[in-house]
Length: 405
Image (cartoon, rainbow, N blue to C red; front, side, top):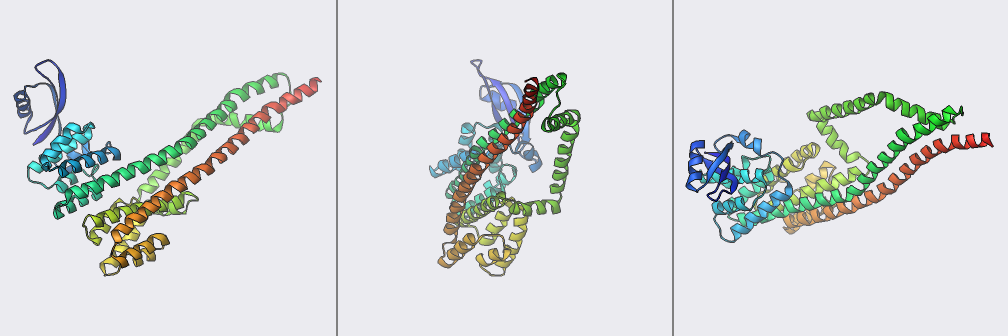
């Protein structure tokens, strides 16, 4: 069974478009004509019988977290209303506006009709549905609580989308200030200063050392700008090649925790993600080992993944979670103490979710503090550069007026 995108005309002459599944293009056209649609364009999207490589051509990262959370929330609501899974996916096709996500839902429904489970059908689209998503859905299917699991998944995705939006909105103003400052300084340096200095040189005026240094700098940048750009591109390419190697990637992920300001923020983000995902998966009925296996794949840090392998080995030998986390030397005392308290009280999953909420709030406070520190730094640096530029212009003018006087 293949999936086709089509454009067709209704009897009234109105043009419509959509997707349809059929064994061949001929069968697809026949199905469209049975629906009183006259196809003008038909293109195969991907084959439902194909391996995940076909699906991956469509299911790349063109689906945002917000779109996926909305689809998950809608599916949970439809299932809670008593609608069968296949019918619920069909309703999603009409409600989903994103083309890539709609194609994926269509393919998932086709695979369900062929006898696959929902989790296995979602696993055929790994670039949209993460291991966390697939494993939680599989746990929901096994326990008969798919609606509740989808509701928790939607909550995780919505939380991630909100946190990302907060971070971007907080950083938008300082980024604008940096761009504006660079633009002003570049305009003064490469447009205004050369014109004034040329005028002064024509008058035979001896330029001050500051003005000469600025002229030499602008001449160098103007003559060898391509070397500077090439050097920056070369450094970036070398860095990308280095982190593409397993050893380099691990070293870079470890260094992230040592950077000033950013290191502490990154650790809080990792701890918040770890606690929320682990707690939610335990709430959904997954075992500790299975939850840790999934968490280690979605934590997005190879250094932490390596540490979690030791944690999993200790848990497999019968230890609790708090002690192995402490032995890594990375996770902060708050996470370790709350985990230990949760294990003692039998409320580990709820305690982990509470810890995640604490870290997420702390992340926002830290970002606000960093931004409040960055803004005056940007203003001071911009003031110093502009002041030097103004001095380099005014000093020769003052000297000229003194000589004339």
